Length: 146
Image (tube, rainbow, N blue to C red):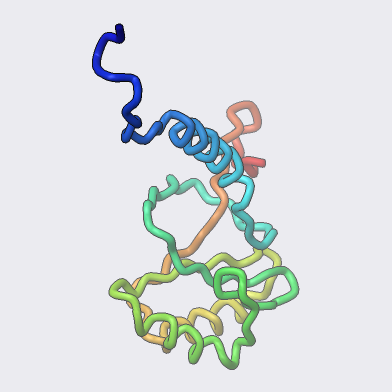
């Protein structure tokens, strides 16, 4: 005698426990590896005392490295074609906001030339990316936060 019905019937429910276990393991793996996958160009940014801005969207970043090479996010472009490439990228965007990261040792004229190309592509907002500086109380001076 069996409780709950006859024993010769098939169980039609799907056992989801192994599926949930696998999904939780994958979630943990992706949570651990996602921050390691973030990469960019290594440049030396100037230091300022301004507070950092929080952003939840992915921004378009123009980078000028120490060799005066220009990048749109991680893709290298020449200054001559920056305006064209940037205009094509901005065609599909509702916000026309770009951030500029420039190495502190490159000439000011190069930065101004790139800024002119960015504005010429139709960018409405241009932000500058810097490293935060820390005030040294003992020496009463600003120094880099590295």
